[in-house]
Structure formats: C-alpha cells, structure tokens
Amino acid sequence: DIEIKDAETALFAATVNEFKDMMGVVHENFQHDEESEFTPSGGQFHLLWLLEEHVLSVVKYGEFDSPRNTEKLDPVFVGRLCFRSWYSLTHPTDLSESAKWLESWLRTKLELTDGTSSKRLACAALVRVLLWVDEAGQLDLGDSDEDSILATLLGFDSRFMAELAHACCGLIQSIPPHLADEVMTGMNHFSFEAS
Image 1 (cartoon, helix red, strand yellow):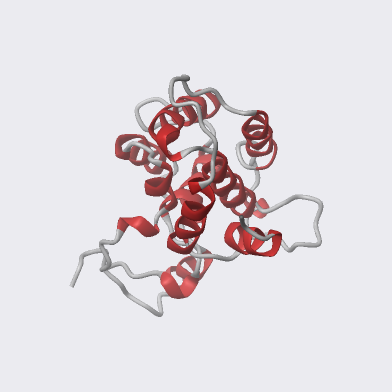
Image 2: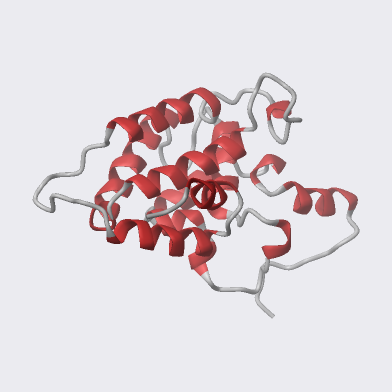
C-alpha cells in the first residue's frame, strides 16, 4: 500500500522515473481482469473531462505559467497531473491499449491530422507535458534516456508525438519556461545534437 502523502508527492513532485518506480509498487497489488478489452474507468473519464476543461480548451498565451492565485489553472500543471493519474489508474497489461485509446481520443479532440491542428496552444501544452522533463535541473539534451519522458511512460506512439509537436511548431509555449527564457535572452546558445 502507498500512503496518501507519498501518492501526492509522486503525482506532483517526483521525476517520471521516481513516479514509475512508485507506481510499480502500487500495480503489484492491482486486481485485474486480463480478458477484458480496455475501457476507461470512471476515474479516467473524469481525467478526460479535466483535460478538456483545463488543457484542450487553452486559447490565450497568458494561460501558461499563470500565477496560482488566478481562477485559471496552468494547462501544463493540470496536464501533467492528469496523465500521471491516468497512468496510475491503468494496469500495466492494459498500457498499450490504453495509449492507443487515449491517442485516438486526443486526435479527435485536437482535430489533429497530419501534424496540423487548429488548437495549437493545446498542442503546445501537451508537448510540454509529454515530451519535456518537468524539472529545470533535469534537462539534459545529450541524454538519450527516454524513460524520463512522460509520453514514453504512457506508451504513446512516436508518430503521434511527432505530429503533436509539429502542430505547435514555432510556439514558445511548447518548451519549458526556463529554456524559453534562455532562448529569448540569447544568453545561452545550445545545440540539440548530442556531444
């Protein structure tokens, strides 16, 4: 069993690898019917509603990295919390089917076709959540460890992720704020090529 405080830490503050390890302990005691086809649970449907309400509905640049005292929640924070919660509610044997189902749902909601979507800010929020590590100090562009990426943990198809990234290409909101600040100030020149 996992304590509430530990679960909160895993959802809010742990790295993706720490979160995965903690959920491994939880999934050991998970009751599961392996014969059934994947269907989202009631909790997962609630997470989809939260994604629609706070992430997929983003229409203003100012909704990103907003102060916590506003009525609107930061779509990156909500997205990260929802996807981590989705993973924690999904049995490991269902992860592949779950990812396919969720990917199809996201494509429909984003109207994502061949790397284009009219909901570019929502795509940017999803790219920040799914393709970038959460913590500023954890960013290592030369690191090939894909396990620290939430999209990999969830089992999303790389083609879907490439289309999602293409749909928000050019939006500064699709990269973490600490990196955006460095890009905007021009103080740090970096390369995406491994050393």
